[in-house]
Length: 191
Image: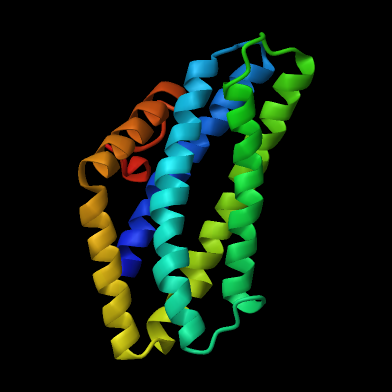
């Protein structure tokens, strides 16, 4: 399925940005303070990883899988939805810290590190489960009419995102180049 290939490509962009977030959190642990930069990470995560990518999964792929007989509350779809909720909690902490007017004290720095590294660990495992288990299940078990609906819906979402999506991919590339310059171009996916 082309939609699944595109979702997996988005995973590579998200993973690269997550490596940059971890590197950024390490610099914060050692005294750096850059709320605007944290705000750029939060923007990428909220707008690209959550609204765009998770939006397509939740609104199209997972709904098709549920219609095909996968349970919503448990099993692979339920687990992925639960992971999305947990991820949003980590991101809420990061957003709160990015918007804080006062300088970060030791406690805020630790909260940032815990949230950034917790989010990274969650998403690494989550993406692995989707790429290795959930997406192949969907490709094997969705009937052709549901596949066609997912393909059309994902294509429409990508078209609607257009320039905004390209801008967010550029942002991911900038974050990666700034915080993990040694990350290979192949893993960087976000030019």
